Length: 352
Image 1: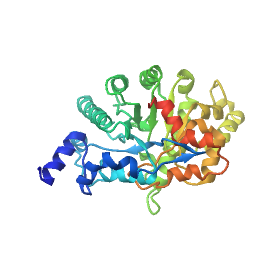
Image 2: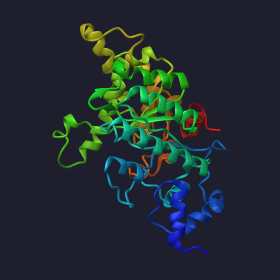
Image 3: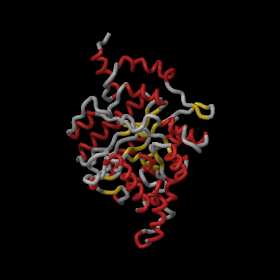
């Protein structure tokens, strides 16, 4: 019988991710016992498959290509504990993404790094098809290359779209040079999941107590990203795009009426759009990370239940009760709850 050290090495090789923090032998038994232990989420007497579209993983061998060394116990690595947590929370499936931190690297490194990450994501999803799907990584600093990587991700690796940052080296993604990427995303009909990287220009303003770079900065970046897609005409040029803004779309859904009124008050500062800014919310998608029942009720009121999917930001400790958040939100019908918990993701990401 192989010893524990060899077993760890073989398991890590098989999944392409780093395993840390618990007895891996328990993980080996998980496949046989998971269904019995997993929380069964019911809505209106019907079993619902829950799909978390905002969950992270990383591969140290990929970040090493940039000269970045990642400790094995880094919070974002794949761990056997993930399955137990998913079962406890009632998360049937996670759609994995890797936060984009490679937009400054050269083309050769970016190409090799992205290829490795997408291969590893595909291997992980193939190994656990009932627990994981994933968004491809793309090198958006090279838009034409990113378009090809997206196509390869979807067609070659069976990934569900791409995860991107909110800007690329201070360029807004609504700039025309990124149109080849958006055109390819529309052509493929796949989801583009945007996750913030931070806004360097406000780093001084959000320094100090309160983790403001994350608490304020991340939703602010999502707000800016989505607003530019609206006001610079990206969503008009590519009306078939499926774009999901993390963290509940930032502040945009809650303050969208100001965008409408801003264009009415100052027509010199607004180029004509095909519809009111608020109407584009029904063309965008959002995760459910708004923390309270009233917040989710309001997000549904502004955007529609058909535009929202659950997200936990796992393994980062931002949400542990995502399923109950949906189940306990007042005013949602059973159909709304089933859609947000998993139905929307199944449809949009073509998860069988």
